Amino acid sequence: MKLKQQLRELVTDSLKALIANDELPALDLPEINIERTRQKEHGDFSCNAAMVLSKHARCAPRVLAQLIVDRLPASNIVAKVELAGPGFINFFLTDEPLYQVVRDVLSEGSSFGHAEIGAGQKVIVEFVSANPTGPLHVGHGRGAAYGDALARLLRAAGYDVHTEYYVNDAGRQMNILAVSVWLRYLELCGEELVFPANAYQGDYVWDIAASIHRSKADGLHRKIDDVFVGVPPDEPLGGDKESHIDGLVERAKELLGEDYSFVFDQGLNEITDNIRRDLSEFGVEFNNWYSERSLHQSGEMEKAIETLQSNGYLYEQDGAIWFRSTDFGDEKDRVLVRDNGQTTYFASDIAYHLDKLDRGFDRLIDVWGADHHGYVARVKAALQALNAEKDRFEVLLVQFAILYRGGEKLAMSTRSGEFVTLRELRNEVGNDAARFFYVMRKCEQHMDFDLDLAKSQSSDNPVYYVQYAHARICSVLGQLSERNMQLADPASVSLELLTEDHEKDIMNQLLRYQEVIESAAANHEPHQIAYYLRELANALHTYYNSHQFLIDNEGTRNARLLLIQATRQVLASGLDLIGVSAPESM
Image (cartoon, rainbow, N blue to C red; front, side, top):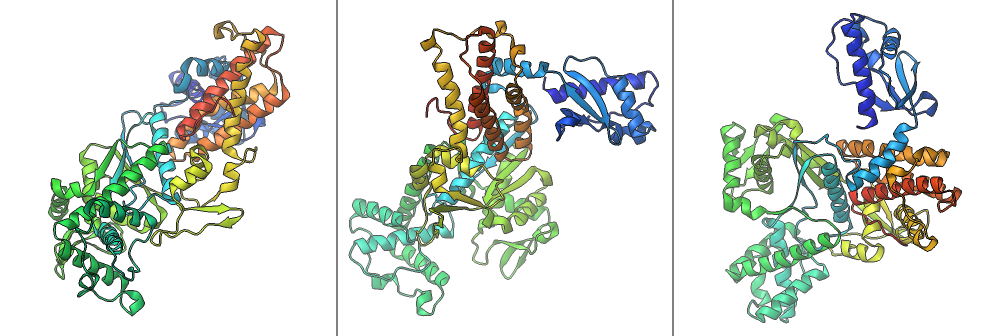
């Protein structure tokens, strides 16, 4: 049982005794709050129960606090108790929990620190979900690292977690990709044209066009003069780039007929396959890849619209069907079906989230790029209109990652193709550095990614510093056989021999691990794990630099070896929570 729970039960038992002896009136006891103190002179943990209950107990907080202390059951984990301020109860612990945590880590292994705060709750975490219109860039990488670390954290906290990638394989952007690929294909057929301002221009578009040309030869070739018949002029010619690209899409559909779907699917499949590969190689796996097109094929779209209609939240205006999202605090109502009968992307999103609810998930967590912040209110409005409780849906916004090399910012533009892909970043700094750096900050904070620092082998590089702590321990343990030594049976080792301040610092850090997991999971903050690992690594390095481990004194040696074994386990487990490896040598 973790320390907070043990202290909570001591206080609860004291209050129950006071009530049973009529020293306090009958009370409905709340959950007793136990928190770590910020200053060591105030003990290890503090409780504010006396101040919370004083009114109901009809007793001054400090007087009530003294009554609680007087009735506290004896415990081998509490050395002394003091009152502070208006009625805080401060607990000073014995060393027993420090020694016990070492044994707990070694016996529980990789499951040490796992909690049950999410037991019985099904959660779906949808993240990345980048439109398959190009390769993943470093911005998507941050969302991938954050979303995957969050899912791992929630599982460690006891939640039943399902991860999902929503593939936007329908709609306007995919049509723009298809026409971009076809125009590049026409260039490979010898046609000359001014490429549209609003088309996708990355090298990957050429690659897809080349694969089509290899399989179809000139079978999809059309004269360029025919392609632009009736298409509105582009922006450089005084026209509108949006109308121009939409006109080209319609013209491509007319000229290609059934072959248009071939071009469309070729672009979709090649890019989606590349996205899958990138994420898999980045250590990010999804339970499901959910197709937007399946919403139309399965009838989910009609179901969502009919539900909103029956609930009274739709109306018709100017030939379009609108959703009354202003009824739920959105800044304006939103179109679900355009006047031409086409459903909007928002309608697809509503149907998708209704399907999540229908699949029985208790909580829906979406990880979006910060540029989608304006979209949050309308989706929340739609879910409320579908009778979902407000707190079942949460959107976590991830800010963009800005890359720096040699102190200079790297340019990024997705549409023009001038961006650093996730694959390029991984090739340069490695998966571990990329993932650690991505989760070092709160997701909503802007992030400056220093490529030079991420590659450096120094204590300034946080991932290197943490991994090196793990490797150092492995090195020590690897020397045992060389010195004709061996690890002792933990049951025979006297951990009470660990009396140095550095040793107690490490054990105190190990004690915090489950608390950090619970806090990080509850607040959706994987960066708490990264911070914790740096602190634990620092404690280990300080200990390593100050003391010898493979000493002649067998009792102290064995105790120290158990301590660093436990430290190695927690370092490895913590790194795994954020998707980073724990190397045995560096």
